[in-house]
Amino acid sequence: MKSFDLPRIAPALVLPLAIAVLASLFLTLATRSIWIDEAMLLKDIIALRSPAEFLKPLPYYDQAEPVLASLFFKGIMWLFHYNIEPLRLSVLALSCVLIAPMFAVFRCYRWGAVVFLLALIGHSFSMGLFLTELKHYFLEVSVSFLAIFALWQAEEHDNLYWPIVMAALLSVLGFSTLIVSGALLVYAFLRLAFRPWDERGKATMAALFASAMIVVASYAYMKYLTVYQLSNYDDYYSTSPLGSLGVLKEAILGAYGKALLVVSAVANVAVLFTHRRGFVFTLNLFFIGILMVVIVGRIVGFYPATYPRHVVWLVPFSMTLACCAVLEFTASPSRPLKALGLVLLALMTLQAGKACYNNLKGVNYEYVDNNALYEHVAQLPPTEFLVYPDAQPSLEYYTLLDPRLSKHQYVRVYDEITKPRDPNMGRVEYQDSLAELLRQRPSRDFSVLVSHVNLDKDISGRGKALEAEISRLNCTYTSYFYVYNAQLIRVHCPLDAQL
Image (cartoon, rainbow, N blue to C red; front, side, top):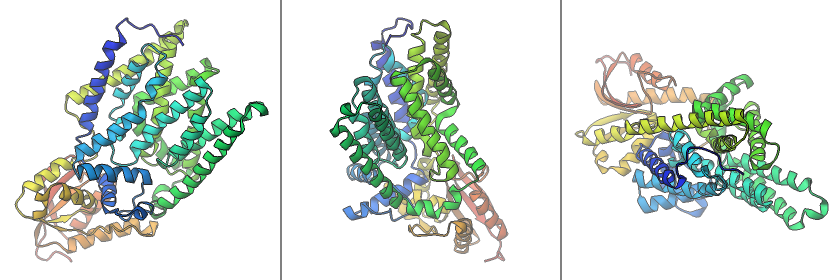
């Protein structure tokens, strides 16, 4: 492969700068608040005591997590307790180790490592967000890069053991990784099927069979671990075929961002017409195949992807293809291809510049500013708070992190125990919990601790339900402390307020 002809600045000088910029972005992400899903999971991790408990569905908040991910989180919590930054940095460190083999893929290009880092910088606040996430999504993103590395080994060095072994390994590290594992097995099977019988090798076929058995067993076990999460929210994940495509579109857009979506789509199409063999061609077909599985799975219902975090593991494939397209096209003697490569590179550079600019402005992409909320609560004199249900998980975690929060009294109603629930009753049970919460109000004037919702701009309906319950009692409220997606409100009720 040819090195592409960009301005002759030594890559060795640019590479350290790119690494420093990326490190700065990741360090910013490592300081962000714990949000509701992370708090729910970490409560489960704290509760796990024996090896047998790690092998069962998690006991609280209907959460699900692969066993190896749970063991990892237990280990880093044993080292760092509840301190958020060391926990996130530990996740980031493992992510970096798992992604590091990708530099071998780009080693044949003079500017390969720089372009790869440029892509990571540009999407540090989308895909990169999950590389510091205290949930298994960081593994799903990281091991997608390992799958790409395995394909590269198979294509460049004709070594089928890489995808075969990687398929088995990936199947136990995540839930969505089972799709990647299955695709790796299909790839290895097709490679073997097109070889003459005497060149297939009994050891390779035996390894393929063993790996397939592991993937099948992993699938069955992951179904067991997610039984409550999927069955309890079946109505939430289920939509019409047309509705499924709309949900999936929003999830992919959230995971990719507009820039990468455009760059990767153009790169996918261009590579189809310009590369008929080799690693880039194979990776493109591999990605198209798993994307079709995701689309069909969402429509049929066996893969209920709803949020960006459910599909963010696709991003490494698109990002790698985009980088390869830039590197290949800018090296092409064809002027149209060279121009296309430079346009794609310019879009990637603009996206990276935007990420750097936002970082310099102090932007920290997070779901909710719980750090500021609970720091303020910790400084207040002893107070009795009614706890909005979605705030309960984060309150529990921050109380462990900051003993000052224990001086307050909290009224909580969230049923945290994992158990079978009627998915059709979810909305009713939530509204009942709000009614029960306000029935336990201490006086005419009281405070409510609200997190993970913006009452002024609520689109989920959950915040509106709280406002409706307050209004039903003929009460009013004012906000006396507000940060992003979290606030403290003071509720005033008349003497004759309904009970």
